[in-house]
Length: 281
Figure 1 (tube, rainbow, N blue to C red):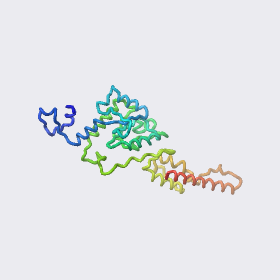
Figure 2 (cartoon, rainbow, N blue to C red):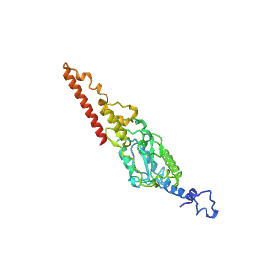
Figure 3 (spheres, one colour):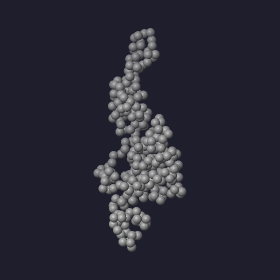
Figure 4 (tube, rainbow, N blue to C red):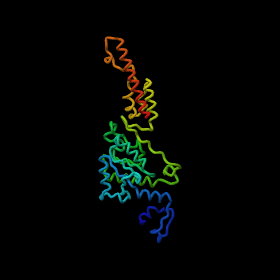
């Protein structure tokens, strides 16, 4: 242990004789525990888009993340402490990202690098982009920019180290991995016609059943992703009076027009039931 490390760990509340200051440090268990974690943070080796190029540059010789003990990037989540989400998160990619996060051992941290990972960036509310990784996994540090420079990422890593320094072994909110029993994994999203968060499944199923029974549902009651799943499949059932259109049943035979209308209503109810069954499965 170097003299610099001793000075970082030493508590000024307890004086040490001058002839022993280079060999002895008095500190707390939480401080030395946090120091060891912050000085040996192993990021997971993966990149998503253009922010990954800046992350690679940060690990190169010019910026040298080895100064912070973060140069050991691991290719497996089971040996990683830090997930750097570097780039645009598509709805197809969020599924393996959450699965990788669940495979990381505690304690683990997430850094959202760039505007896309933090909130969707220029693709926010796009049909295939997640508007922020924090909708699915907890984020500890946000690094703004599009893309952020290596200096900005280094600043984010330093901010993460300061966050770790402020944690205490005596506070279970700071170190939940020391709680009783295993922690619950983050539910892995379901990729179908759109991305579905399993934590919202009960609400989505209830709205689908209401739509299948012919009841109306308000758009403000559902998130955008849920509306994208339910609305296309249950719109006809939710508004049976408007389906089919008058032009579709225009005929000189009133009996035939009535039969066509009933047939379209039956098909709409069938599609609504199938949508509810798909959600259940």
